[in-house]
Length: 337
Length: 272
Image (tube, rainbow over all chains, first blue to last red; front, side, top):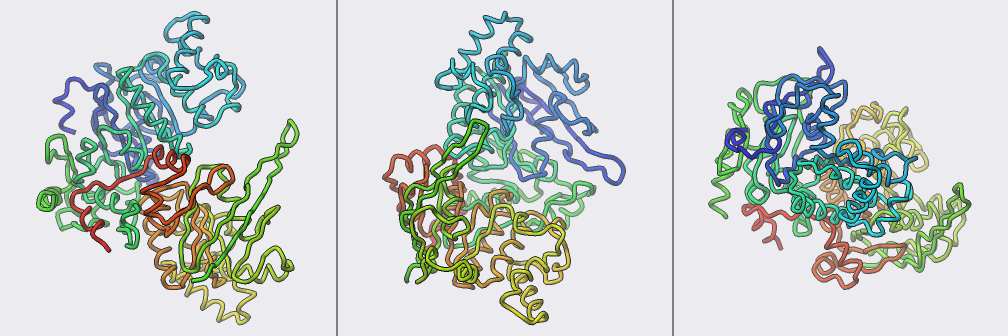
């Protein structure tokens, strides 16, 4: 998006990224011309429904994506280093040191037959060249930093002896162990219990402050995103349809899709009425279309929407929306607001 | 209004056999709960709190070790298996994963028809009723010949609801019915549940870990943890002033979405 060129302090910059899976008629265009920045110390959330392309975008970063994915276009920069043209091997060491990752299911990313101490220490021995003893001492400090009580016992434990929340804390400790500038968190609280979710979110915010990290945070859950994000980009059918500072986005969304989604979230004060729901379904990712991907479901749709894809345009400072009629939504806000 | 279902002092222990022998889990520890006819009781709690065990115990799918469940005038523990089977048509359950109650090889029409065999003898009448049920949940009667995997998650949940409704139940127990659905689809299913409740005078027991969903749908909320209901009250009151420490912690730590849009807030909040 256009603000990317103005910010020199972008930690991560994705420019015009397109990713597809498969070939020929079965070619599925998962990400379509996505550009986004994660600034220093910013928690930038990608939010959207399943199939919107959030995870593929977040994983497109340093060669994390599956082998079946095809990078059609785009460049990814970590500060001044271009990443997308590098090999997986070249990226491995870079990634381990600069970019940490946390996923939905912490259990799948831990080795069941190694004690936690080894798993937390090993990356530090590899990337920071620490001795075994030094890495272990640092591992202990890290586990305390992620608020694991009884960190000594956790170091000796195997993954199956820990609860889901404890595993996720340990995985966060591993992700931040080499002092990365960027943390990629893909649905990190989705599999956790409600109260643990809240604790992990405040932990991430605190770590961001203490360690000066930027976080690219992927979630389908608006409640989670509202609790954690500084900036939010809403994805739909492989593209970003709206991006704004969190508060602005929630006060006055400028894309009809965002607006409808927010209306569709149940809340106590909506009790007794029916929720507004988004009619229809997202377009088939195998199809190409010339107009707006939201056209068929949009209450504001007019002729131009079927023909011309609306670009992501800045409608208010820092507030971008890809809609020909975003200003109509904005005027409604200013009249009633 | 009388009570639709009343449970008193339910206890249930699960025995898990593992490598290191048996472990006993007290899933229900003296739960008493009732739902008035025509109302919706939401049960909220974290995983392992005993919500689903309670649902299964209430419907005698997995009878409690101790305690009584009264449905209308009938105490479920005191009747014969045969009578219980017949009574089952009056209370039905809808699960999070509708696939668990649908045969993947059977057309959805046949799956729904199965639930009608005991009630409607004539085949043509039965087929009419299937069409009617599909229409009632927002599907087309022509969909009857298709098999479950041809449908999206939201549509499959509609099919699961249609199958539960086939028996003309008075009480529907909804166990996390929208938890695996996207927000926009979730809204469609919640609206459908509200419509059906009005049309068919249903009573709901709604189980969910999602505070947004529970507080939207329920007249009353019961909070469960560690096999007990620790607090219960009318939705607004409970949300505004929870008294139990666990409830306060649950409400404080759970990330809940608040619609802060300037434009719509007045509209939603001004409703009577």
